[in-house]
Length: 372
Image 1 (cartoon, rainbow, N blue to C red):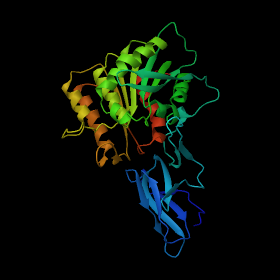
Image 2 (tube, helix red, strand yellow):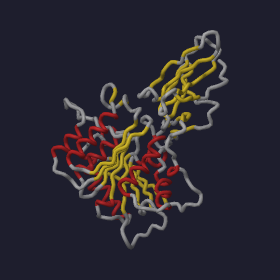
Image 3 (cartoon, helix red, strand yellow):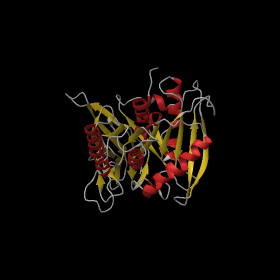
Image 4 (cartoon, helix red, strand yellow):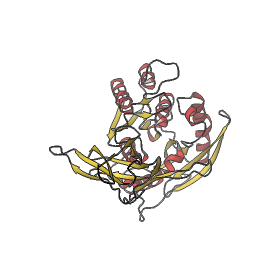
């Protein structure tokens, strides 16, 4: 097999200012070679076969894509996933040596109108906060959790206590969504007050699928063990209006669950691509968490909820596929009808940290932002 070229090309759709035709191409001498595009561009995580141009060694696949799309992709060549050798833009899932997780690298498709990622890009002239790793033992869950704590530049253990955000899937928000960098930049530009971030656990923890599926003992761990430890160790506010619970995917569902039960601690819920269509085993209907909010009195909570336009078929804990672009607006409508303040956003991308590293800042600014 000869690999000589792949680089996505796009051109505007005639009479359509919002979309472009994006074509992926690959050269392979073996006409029997299996060649596919691996991406979320069809609205789901997929591997779609490329067509061979008759009489040539050129394989191609074309999609109609919004001009503000940012998404990762790979090629499946004979079943092996590879990046685009002629596209220098890549996005990496790093290894997690502690648990033996081996990451991978994808190429990046970014159309001209994709939102900038200025908040998640480190700036050499911006003062840096400090990130410290800890281990917190839970007697309730009979488990030990990795916890990272970010303190802002100039942090002091006296004076005015700090607002804080508790972030689920902490490893993910340290390594894939550069939360310390985002907070440094927002604070330096006067867009956020100084915040402490408590980032707990990992998407690869063995108990994560249980803990974050609206699991009451994990809620008990947060309020009875993790937060008391954090308050003893760091100078944190007791004002819920200055405190946020943050999560993505299943963690976004758990953030909504924790907000429902602990609005006396967290006044803000930031839900990135949350699995809001989830239901407990045995329940006949989806969107269980929305029904819990319907059944409760109005709580002192504010929400930021988002979903990707390519998150229409996402593989989840439930059999088959789940449409995140149904669960998110349904949750928004329920909360707004109940009387909650809800900031809602949709981005042109899939279930992908490439997008969340940009939209996390949007959620923080909506819930906690201040004028520069």
